[in-house]
Amino acid sequence: MRFTEEYLFDQGVVPRWYGLSYRVDYMFVSVFYPIPFNLIVRWVRNIWLDVSSINPAYMKEHLWYKQGYAAGAKIRRTEVLERRVKGLEKELDDAEGAIKFLYNSMDDKLKEVVKIVVKL
Image: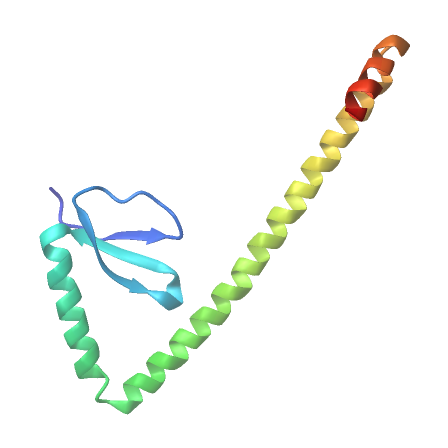
């Protein structure tokens, strides 16, 4: 068994012997370790966050980083969704053109059958 971190962005498959250690919400990622070590990593991380939160300068810097990363991730998600919508629109236009081409190349009897089927 390898001892490595596994990062899971959005959706994915985690090996059976890996357990959730922690989530990084502003990066939209989950971090997994092999099952006995995931608890140790979680405890050490929680202790580190508790100790480091005593320093206000660190917390302010960390908050700014989280806000900036979340804003950038939101912009990136919007761009990705816009590209997906444009791609789907293009595919629909291409499919519509192909259907029109096929319909125009049919003989009259077949066109009548298609009209009846489309009405159903």
